[in-house]
Length: 312
Image (cartoon, rainbow, N blue to C red; front, side):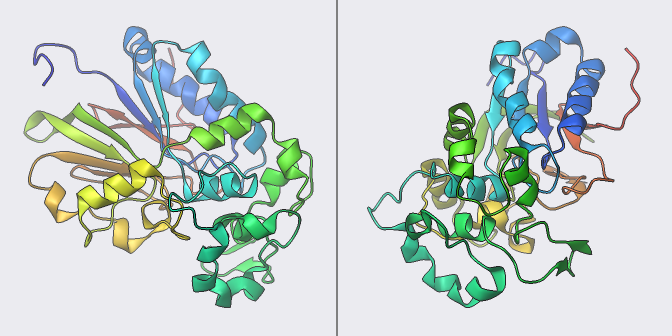
């Protein structure tokens, strides 16, 4: 446990950016304005995933993210994998291979009934591609996403704008060559979970010292947490669909075994901003052009948005 008299370290958790570079720049400026400069310069910055798709400027977003460690050398930067980023990494061939030596294609069968409807990618390199890469680079037959009330942008992942930001048409295998090595390294190095033993959070009962677990969608409530964390730390790509990165209701709540001692669980993914006790869901934008990109700052639990009009 850290010195109780020491000033708590600032932690900023930044929600899904989805290719909106200008929003990310504005949010970053607003975080700088909202936080004391010495605190900001040493803050822990956790990006909650989904950097690509939907918005127009994925390439610029990743340029911005890879520049941060040299621009802010005393900050600590964590880049979580979102379900969209995992699929992008799969398409360009930088996912870690399955640890048991199996082929990615072994994971297709469970979902093959969706192949025709989702128009899975069948171009160069598809034979050895993780399921999500094939779905991401595919061409969905439906034009309209009824659940979201929006038109699909190329694939079920709305990946078309990501391809276009690198100068190639949606579904083109040329994306593999078009993505710079620095971006491939970023995609290869993303983590599936981040854990901190001691962060501070303001509650109704004062400041609490708490464990923190950051994961894009959340942890499954009916599965052993230790096993889930071990699987996520290992980035086990045998599984064709990773619930902690892509689940919905099944990962919304904090698993019961984590409620016995204070544990903050922070995620993006859900297209909502929802703060309930120590469960923080920070995805106000959801990749929608008209909605803000938000961040939560600890210990204050203050929400900062790209749209805030802050004065220095």
